[in-house]
Image 1 (tube, helix red, strand yellow):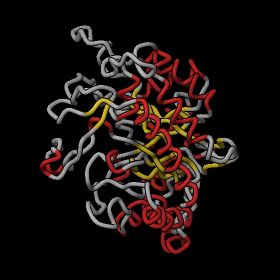
Image 2: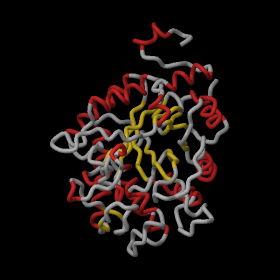
Image 3: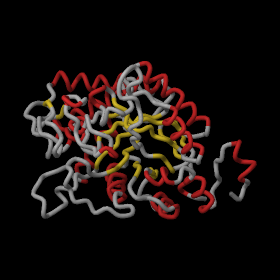
Image 4: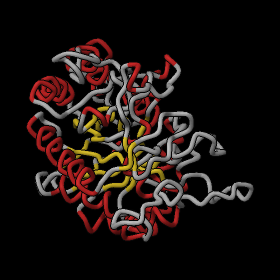
Length: 368
């Protein structure tokens, strides 16, 4: 039997296979008015198609817990009732195809208020329709506008916003929630010594730099059912310390294994392992499966289930990663944009059972 198509159970939630859809921002919500941050018919069709294609778990794109936490003005949000209602349609569509709906909750921090990628991705100043960003300090990301350094009271308000968004996610029908702690966004910028130079209880020592992440997890766990899982997405390395030609100090793979142990104690059930994103000029050795070793290190060093991402495109490649115990699940991003039915096509190649919609089954047949 294919290891990739074996079910996996986290707490009391069983996912039908190990092919999961990674969260990918679509930058397609309204940017102003009562529909700001609200999921549209595009989001419904986009995510339901991947569920119909046999994907086991579908993670909704980074969804901001507060207006100022959006990466761009066109990002999704989950800070009000209208946004929650729209997401209920999406979770129902995903579930109707036998997949599990999940959501990534996020705050973009100093990388917020940016133009969409196809508009260049530059920071939008408040004078041009953007907003004042925030971070652990006032150090900017690249050439983006300087953020405001968060006060302790403001940090605690964001922690509460994560908890409130998790409550809305549950009401909207999501069965798993992922904390976005990667790619240079707010939580990651608190974790890394490169960006966190605070001198209060949220900076300096390991305990202080990880405090915000653990408080966010605690706030979510306080409202999330004990029988349902919480995930945490991490950048396992900033790609600074590993580069002998780069004198900057950053977050490392060893830090990630240490954090994984603490996250597990705090109630996290799976670490979604990515890398990078903290600085715009890090040298990253990109290639097929280049992030898998970091997931493997967490799995071996912390004993926490892991997902792995990054240039995983072939069924045999994904099967080997899971079968050899290098990761528990494989999350596909761009490949699922190119091939929405990747999971069912991979199942055919690997000799596993396909999960076609009933409406398709009579037409595609057992050999499709």
